[in-house]
Image 1 (cartoon, helix red, strand yellow):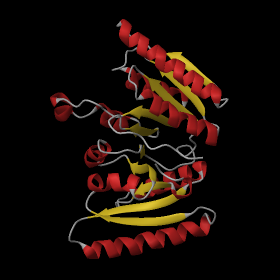
Image 2: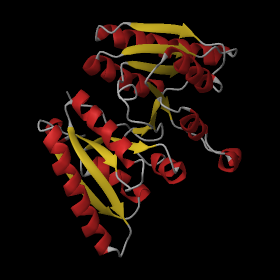
Image 3: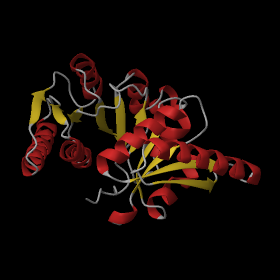
Image 4: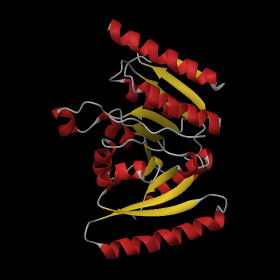
Length: 271
């Protein structure tokens, strides 16, 4: 378990054109949760010169950021290997509680998400509108992982006074109906505990169509963040046409998407 004083918001720095968006969102989330901001770069094996170049570049970025945000604790980290190889170390050895990434070049990022104990926050754009995080969409289906997604929604409500919009799947099967109802009750109790006012709606679609409906509603309402679970069971069709979360992230545009891996125990935020 991560310790309070060491928890970090990690930003994946690949030195692409969209890296600055990821840094802007990482900085914003660090401010919301009052955590250290860590700029993280994985470098290929056998490329020591890349490590040194990355360390110099990240150090320069931190010095520039410190000029504008002197109260935010900042650090940098370089690890040998690719993102997928380093994601477990980020959480277990360096106390990362979230990884912030741009929403381009998704394939290797989604692979790493499948191994991750911490949420991945996929971002696009860095205008003040994108960085607001004041309205959060929380789709709720019949899976147990909804408790993890709702926990992160409660964090944004508590530390950023975000409005939480809960959209519950409409199921036909009685067992699935029971699970959705159970998840909804848990969320209501959790948000009530922290005195969070949530707007709860019934979806028109079932669990499989829920993320798409939630995204459509979020675009209409102006939500800034959607929190969803990643795929738990991956089949041949998913491998051929892509995972649902990949499609959703690509369609989200300026709505940020947080994905939580349901196959690993999630690290929690210490406050």
